[in-house]
Length: 307
Ligand code: CAA
Image (cartoon, rainbow, N blue to C red; front, side, top):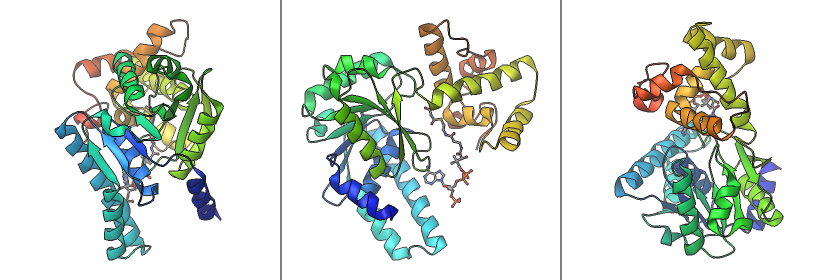
């Protein structure tokens, strides 16, 4: 069955040792799902620049693991003792480091650092320097060009996009992104690896926003433009898409969830780079909220107030 296929995919996978750079909203989730799928002999190397960010990442992983395992205990799938042992096992497969030199033995490194092209280019150069030449370098970027990072690395055939979705622990999709210089073997290996961490991979080419965000982000922007024009209240716009289109969250709730600063940086970047694409627009309310420090769920206020 499915579990046997998963076992087989894991045994056949050439990707055993995985590194993750950046332990924020996305990166901590990638570390966690990788550790959950790993065998005891393989560790996930989790890298972030400061002790504070490492501690924050650790705490997030710990809380999320507890949530997932407690749920299984409540459902009667696991005993409390088994849950504690699993948590211990998964946590012990994660090692933490503050320098990329800890990634020297990795077969795959996924970066999930800030969405700033210059900072990413510099990281890719460093990663190519510290890892083995056959190590695959992946970016979790949601809107930047994979080709540009591939070129910056100096190892273009081994650079791909591996785009996870928030919350990584629950969302089943990974977009695997190739560009014209990607080695087809590398691309296939990444698709198999995504399956071994319990995700459904889809093949994407290196276009702005790949598949999901090319459809999703302009949709969020249209919801905000409606609000700007006074065509509907925040609540009515969201309820409409929840109850009328079956979306789990309406566009303005989802924008708060993703982070309004992230939405703004994606749209701003696209408008500058692709000025002739009519679906790339920056709504006034988005700019105003970010300028006022209202970044959505993470800052406590966006289109809604959050606990
Ligand atoms: N780790 C572990 N468990 C978690 C968790 C996490 N990070 N987050 C939530 N859970 C748990 C909850 O505690 C809950 O457990 P209980 O039932 O025991 O309380 C369970 O998972 C389900 O959570 P919810 O009750 O909140 O469930 P929900 O049915 O409302 O689903 C959701 C939550 C999956 C987030 C759903 O609302 C959803 O699919 N929303 C849309 C999300 C989305 O579109 N994401 C993509 C954003 S775009 C993106 O990521 C790309 C980009 O680049 C911008």
